[in-house]
Length: 101
Image (tube, rainbow, N blue to C red):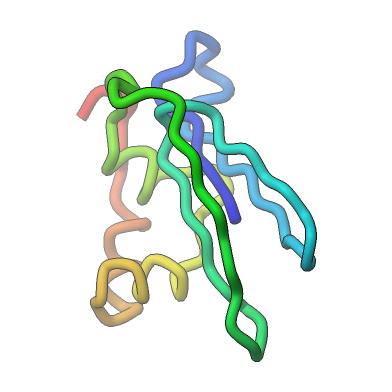
């Protein structure tokens, strides 16, 4: 699982990627309104329960957070999520993503 900060006040923390491998029984909380993902790297099915605290998460610069995170989100995860070839994800991650585009 992981999430990416977006538009933080501290410019040194912009689009920072946080990830964690989960094991059965683990719990992970995504901060409200941030770009996040889950990807099953195991060989068996996984079950997840989700709850939402608000229907108004705020403003997020999605492209910057997804393709300009530091470190980069695993391209295989993004390729599967967007249903595109990995070379397209590699191209997008190689572009310059400012904090306000």
